[in-house]
Length: 133
Image (cartoon, rainbow, N blue to C red; front, side, top):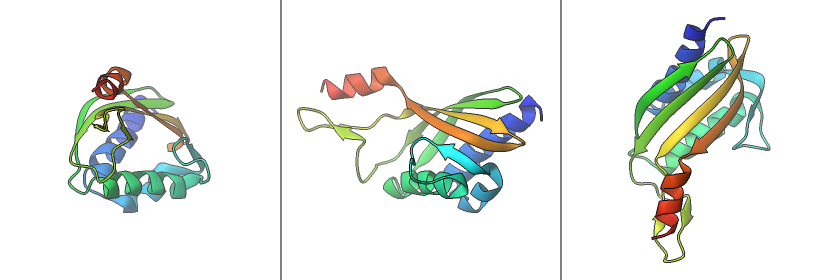
């Protein structure tokens, strides 16, 4: 597997699964034993599906903008921004303002052409700035 296949996996997840709500594609992206660190009690496609559906259901008007994808033969990093009004913010600041980090890095470890591990990171500066409000 080459870096282009890793790039395609990330692009499919961001543009199709999240951007177009194509949850039917999850089963072909996730390895059977995939670990999604946002879903500690699930594995495989069930974990990725729960993650993607939960995010999209919380933000029905979700729009995804892919800023950059960096890929190797065994990993892919997608840096993306999202817009929309979530039903529930990620957190609430001390003053009661919603904290909604919108810049995300999705990191996939890829084995045998499928996602083996998924970690999501948000922009810490964005979070700290919102928490201070």
